[in-house]
Amino acid sequence: MKALRLLTLALFAFALSAVLSPRAEAQSKCTGKFVNPITDVCWSCLFPLSVGGLKIWPSNRPDTDNPNLPVCACGSPVPRIGIAAGFWEPVRLADVSTKPWCFVNLGGTKISPGFDIGQGQLSGPSQKGGNGQNTSKWHVHWYVYPLLYWMEILADFACFEQSSFDIAYMTEVDPLWQDDSLTALINPEAVLFSSPIAQAACAGDCIASTAKLPLDATFWCAGCQGPMYPINGNIAASVGHVQASRLALARFAFKIHREGLAWGTMGSKGLCNKYPMPVLKKQQYRVQMTNPIPTVSGKAACSPLGASTMPPQAGRAFPVKGEDMGYLVWRKRNCCVL
Image (cartoon, rainbow, N blue to C red):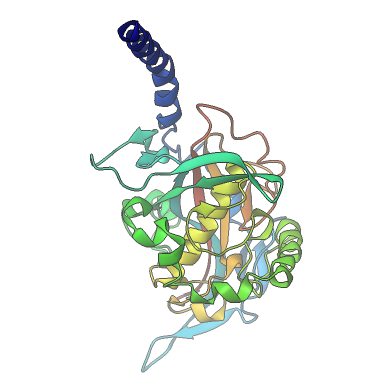
């Protein structure tokens, strides 16, 4: 009788695994598509185009402050006179997914090295203080993607970043991205901004980033998405795929600036050379969705870091084939055209 019971349990376990395995496989399946530089890019996000403080190609999208004077000088010992130009450049592409080694913008390819590291997750709700709360853990792949230089939109324009396509960063192999305690090594100031008063200031950043530009003074906030600290992919309050992935992307941008892997390019300081920016100025970036559904038109198609994920982002994440997110990152560039 005991043997029959054990056999019955074994058959039940086998049947249950046969039912659950396809679902588990579907949940881990990486989805996405290659970015079409013609149809999947919001080319109006390039504007406004400025010379000094004058917008020679205006736009209804908010812009950062530009140098007032239209002329500039760079070089030593003999400075060369040039024109102070300001524009927005698509320079980076990012995969943001809970599935490790999921290259969303490379056609939804999963390229695993074969060892078990960097697991992501999306779970909840868990009961904390009587309230249901979802949590998630995201990974980011950061591509060098200087689209304007490749397409030779302006020939011999030295202000464009001149480089080839490359996968510059994968968070799966970064221990500082995995653990909040290790992350504290590069953001020890996080403890200063964990108070309710400091977090209340993020409401103002949410309004500002949605209406116009984020508040760089509140660098510990990622606007409507949540707190900027810790600067890793562990999202304690995950509302939805778009909100959580944009928060992970904003934190990643802060992280690489803190590590000296990304530099400042906007304002008068950026006219001649890039400069160190260990504390991210959120106004320097715009983010445009490329996967699963590109945002290619409208005022909010390439919104600032921290902007609300209400329309046009609402409804752009969906089960099974719309859970892995891809973004094109636009960077403000002020440059002295010599």
